Length: 90
Image (cartoon, rainbow, N blue to C red):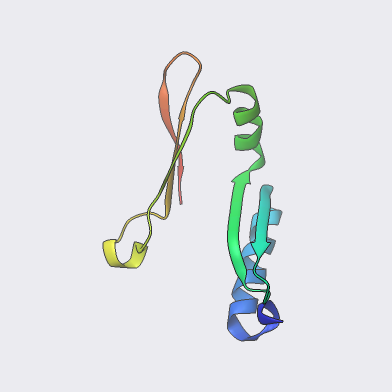
């Protein structure tokens, strides 16, 4: 299958292992030909905070990161009292 071929497989496996070791919650979807189509991950503590303060979650996903030299995702949370905080930049 496509995920088991060459360096793409190695990089994907290393990424998933690193995320698991660092206590990230991971969900992914494979295409019919076993290519990774979607990948979502969040740290377990961020998931806990979202469960408590689930009113607002903004995810700014920037694509073509090499072209624009921008972070891939900038996650911003707003607390139940209106305080905005950058949760993390990836």
